[in-house]
Image (cartoon, rainbow, N blue to C red):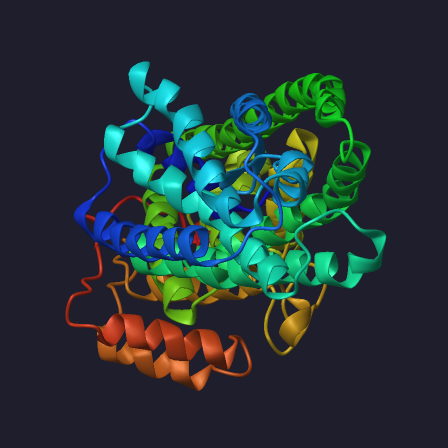
Amino acid sequence: MTPETERLMTETDARRSQRLPLRELLVEGVLAALLLAGMLALALLAPADRAFNLPLAAAFVAGYVILHRLEFRVGAGNFTPTELLVVPMLLLLPTPLVPLLVAFATMSANAAEVVRGRRAPNRLLLAFNDAGFALTPAVVLVALGAQTPDWDLWPAYLAALAAQFAADFVRDPARAWFGCGVSPRAVAPELVEAHRVDAMLAPAGLLVAFAAIDAPAAVLLVLPLLKLFQGFAAQHDERVEQTIELSRAYRGTALLLGDLLKEDDEYTGHHTQDVVELSLRVADQLGVDAEVRRDTELGALLHDIGKIAIPGEIINKPGPLDDEEWALMKTHTVVGQQMLDRVGGLLAGVGVVVRASHERFDGHGYPDGLTGCEIPLAARIIIACDSFNAMTTTRPYRPAMALDEAVTEMRRCSGTQFDPNVVDALLEVVDDPGWQLTLHEPLRVPASLAV
């Protein structure tokens, strides 16, 4: 699960009981008006190939309400295995009426959440728009004259399913972008996964339709499947919640280690917080994805964590280190990775960034002599921000370098010590009038820590 997906899931859960904000309300309202107009036009103007069967329609609606309670988490949203019933509805009921029936069933299923106070009333608008997926396949089936079960019409059925998926890939990302400001790239993976499941369920729905041509009661045969899906949904949601909790536990462990580092040495703790803030600004300037941003944040927080294992007499030595001491000090990146490997999971990946946090772009860094893009992007960001912060921070044995001097030094080392793209982004951040470098009061800093 990506950090962006986890964030969107958390925000989605938090928003369910909140009223739609004005921007999202307007977008969803316009879409609802368009969908309702399309559903009514189809129902009133399109010819139907069969008569309306009220008991059968009621059974489908009731089954759909039950089915709609079986929500699976897919990315930041929820997925319902609706193809099991929508496909037979399209072929056993008057096809032009099906989108309206699906909308009514969806609204009815969500109304219970409103009554329980788990969903804001105006979020029923979202439920109506979610039901809009049924409009496109209904239009295609009517246009192609494929409103009844007939194996010879399979190309029309395939075209209807493809049209449904295509419309979803236009409508849902547009809703997310215009209504919530969520990037279509963040929505696309969950759409792909939902459609993958829909594509596998659609043939089962088609078989239900053919089985019920002469015996509509055969639709009830799908009920055991609904019970089976209920168990799958519960297990799936439990795993998703466990994944989120585990991710939070890893982040909490990282913050705890950061506090431990600050407690162990005051300067290192302050310096680390400054590097975290600057690294995140540079990551945002570069436009990195959510995973790289997370690794940058946690890597910057923990890039010096291995110094906890370095003997105190070396850490606190007032003068320069000899060769043996320097060799031991340079092991702190490897020690840091080993510490995080023991935690495992998310922090094991961050450990790779910590290990590389003193590499150089030209390959003359340590511990592995990595060059260029062999160094993880998060580490390249941290390396530059760590050095820039060190240069612009006052220490007992030297004053802080002037900002313009530090900028000149960063440019001089661009392409050798630092990634040129990272340097450019860092200097753009520093040049921003709204950015102010945080300088801490001078602290007692051993010379050996300037590594």
